[in-house]
Image: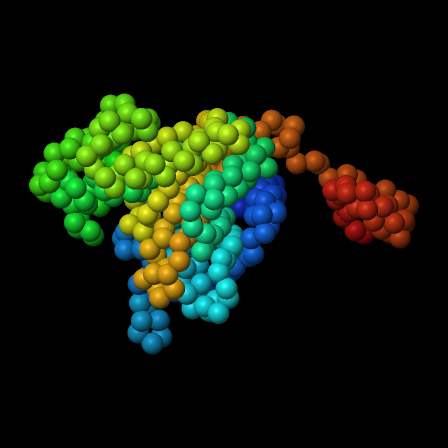
Amino acid sequence: MHTRLQLPQGASCFTFDEARRRRALEAQVISVFEGWAYDEIVPPLFDDAATFDPSLASKLYTFTGRDGTTLALRPDFTSLVAKIAAGRLLQVKAPLRLYYSGEVVRYEPPRAGRQSEFHQMGLEFLGGGGSAADIEVLVIAIECLEAVGVTDFVLALGHAGVVTALLDEAGFRDSDPPRQAALESLNRRDPAGLVRALDAVTGSEVARRALMGLAEDDGIRQSISSARQVLGGVGRASAALDDLEAITVTLERAGLGGRVAIDLSESRSLDYYTGVVFRIYGGGLGFEVGGGGRYDSLLEGLGRPMPAIGFMLGLDRLTLLVERQVTAARDAVEAPAPVHGNSLAERVLDARAQRNRGARIRFGDLA
C-alpha cells in the first residue's frame, strides 16, 4: 500500500459490521447510564495540557496553540468533566450525574494490541459522597456488563487509602519519582521493582513489609481480615479497610457478592484517587475492560470542593470481550433481506413494509 494511504501507527479505524457492533454496544451502555438518571456531557477534544493529571504527562499528544499556549488532546475524560463542573456548570446545583462517550488519545509504546486512540464510555457522580454513592456507581458498572450480555466478569475492589497510607508511612513523598515507581510496581505485581523504590526511602518497617506483602500477594492482598492483622498499626489504612468492608457487605446482601473480589494493591496509579478504586476484568481477557474510583480532592483544587466518584469502560476492549463471551448466534449481525417488486414503486413499498417490521434490508442496485 502507498505510504500516503496508511494510517498512523496507533490510530483506529472501524468499518461495516465492526462499526455497527460497536455502535450497538455503545447504545446499550448509554441506555444504562440514562436509566440511572445521568445526563450526557460532551467535553472538548483538547484543552490546556496542565488540565490533565501529571501522571499522564508522558502520554500526552501536545501541540502549540495560535496564542502560544501548550494544548493537549484529551487522554481521559475525568479531568475535563471536573473542570467543566467547576467552571461552566458552577451555578448548577450539586450533585451532578454526568456521562460521556467518545475518543481519547494517549501515547502507548508500539506493541501488539495497544492503540493510542481508543473510545471510552463512562460517568461521573459529582457531589456523591459516602458509601451510597460508591454502591450506586459499582452497581451501574455491573449492570453495564450484564446489559451487553457479558456473564463472566469481576470487579476487583481496592481502596486508595490503603496504599496511600502505606506509601506515606514508608517514607514516600507526594509526586516524587520513587512514589510513582512504587505505585507502578504494585499495579504490575512487581516485587523487584518495589524493592528498588523502597531502597530510595526510609520509613515505617511495618508499612514497608505490608507494601511488599501486597506486591507478592502473601495473603493480605485479597483478604480484608488478613490485611487488618498486618496493618493494625497504620490507622489510616485501617479506616480505609472499614470503608471497603462496608461496601462489600452491602453488595453481598444485595446479591452481588459474586461480582466482586478484593485486591488491596489496586490504586489505579493516578494520584487523584482517594477512596474505593476498582478494575473490571472479563473472563477470557488478560487485561481490564474498565475501572474507576473515588477522587474527593480533585474538584477542591479547581475551586469547587465536593466528593466525586466515577468509572469508565473501554469500548474497544468491551467489544472484544463480547465477541469472546457472547454466543455466535447472539452476536451475529442479521444478513440484509432482499427487497421484492416488479417496479421501483413496488420495491419501495416492500422496503418500507419490511423496515416497519424492524428488518434490515438491502435495497439493491438501481437501474
